[in-house]
Image 1 (cartoon, rainbow, N blue to C red):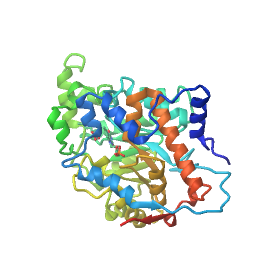
Image 2: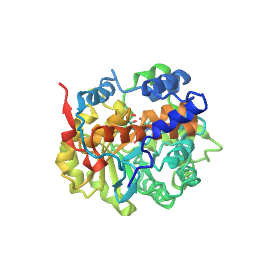
Image 3: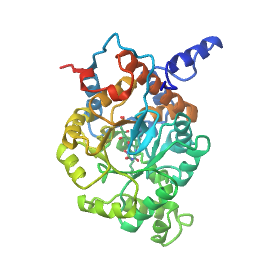
Image 4: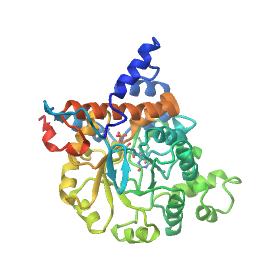
Amino acid sequence: MSTPFANFQYGIYLEGALNGKRPSHPMGWDALEAEATERLAPGPRGYLNGGAGTEDTMRANLEAFRRQRIVPRMLRDVETRSLARRVLGTDLPAPLLVAPIGVQSIVHPDGELAVARGAAATGIPMIASTASSYTLEAIAEAGTASEAATPRWYQLYWPRGRELARSLVERAEAAGYGAIVVTLDTWLLGWRPRDLQQAYLPFLESVGIANYLSDPVFRSTLEKTPEEDPMAAVGQFVGVFSNPTVTWDDLAFLRECTSLPIVLKGILHADDAREAAARGVDGLIVSNHGGRQVDGAIGALDALPGVVDAVGGEVEVLFDSGVRCGADIFKALALGARAVCVGRPVMWGLTVGGEEGVKTVLQSLLAELDLTLALSGLANVDQIDRSALTTRP
Ligand SMILES: Cc1cc2nc3c(=O)[nH]c(=O)nc-3n(C[C@H](O)[C@H](O)[C@H](O)COP(=O)(O)O)c2cc1C
Ligand SMILES: CCCCCCC(=O)C(=O)O
C-alpha cells in the first residue's frame, strides 16, 4: 500500500513554487524552534523550553540521537512504501503520536483544541494531558469535528483520592479515548530554574486545571464553587493533582476502573519494565519527561534498548524525549520503539501557526520519516531494525 505521505514535502515545495511564494511556516526544525521561542513571552518560553537543573538531561536527550547514525542500504525496491503500524490494537497511519503536554493555552489561545484538530487532520493520535487548558471532553470533540476516525489517548496524573482518579478515567473512556497513559515521573515537579527565575507557574493563573474544575468528584471536595472562590480551587488542585504514595500494587485499582489499554509513561530502568510486564500493563513509554524532572538522568534514547530487551515483545514499548525530526523517529524505531511521541516540536508549531502549525509539523515529520525510510533502502516501518544504525562514539 502506498503511503499518502510519500514525497509530501515536495507537495509543499511545489505548491509554494507554483504560487511564487515561500511557505510562511519555518520549514527547518531549528528555525521553527527559534521562531516559536522568539514569539513567546518569557514565562511560557521558559516553561516550554526549559528543563530540570542544569538541563544536562535535556541536552543528553538530543546528544543521544546525534550519536546514533543511520547506515543507508542501496538497490532495494522502495517505490511502494508504508508507514502504517498497529499500536495497542489500533491501526495508525504511522508509528507517531503527539506526546501529552499540559497547559497548551500558554502558547496559543486555542491550545489543545488546535492540537486536536491539527492531529486529526493527519490521523495522528493526540495524548491529551490531565493538566490540559480545556476539558478532556472539549478536546475529544475538537478532534472528531473533521476526522472521526482519528484515535486519541488520555494521560492521567494519578491524583490523591481514588474516586477522583476513577472519575477522570471514566470520563476519558466515556469521551472515546482509546488508552490511559499514566505518567510516573512527575509526582512532584522537578527543580526548574527557568520557571523559578520568572516566578512562573501557569497553574497559579488557573491554566491547566479545566479537568478538575469540571469534575464532580473534585468539585464535591470544595467548600465554595470554583466560580465563587477560584484561588481556593487552585489550592485544592495543587494539593491533589498527584499522589506520591502510589506504588505498583495500586495498578490493580486502575485495572478495575477501565477496560482500556494501560500505558506507563516514564520508564527508564529495565527492572521497572519487567515489573510492569509482570503486572500486566499493555504498554510503556520510555521517557524522561523531556529532561524536566531528574537532572542527570540517562538520555531517554540511551535507555530504550535496555527496556525493549527487558520486556522482549511482551509489552509494547513506545518512546519520547528528544525527538526533533523524521530521522530521530527512524532511530527510535530502529532501537525497538513500537511508536514515538513528539512533544516540544508540536508546541512550537502551535505557537507559530495554531492548528495549521500543528498540522504542518506533523505532516513534515511524516514526510521526513517516509523519505528517511526510502533513502535508507526500506519499504515499510517493520523493516527498520538495529542493523540500520551504527553508534558514533
Ligand atoms: C511544556 C510541557 C508540558 C508537559 N506536560 C506534560 C503533561 O501534562 N503530562 C505528561 O505526561 N507529560 C508532559 N510533558 C512531557 C511530554 O509528554 C514529553 O515527555 C516531553 O515533552 C518529551 O520531551 P521533548 O518534548 O523534548 O521531546 C510536558 C512537556 C512539556 C515540554
Ligand atoms: C502542578 C501540575 C503539574 C503538571 C505538570 C505538567 C508537566 O508535566 C510539566 O510541566 O512537565
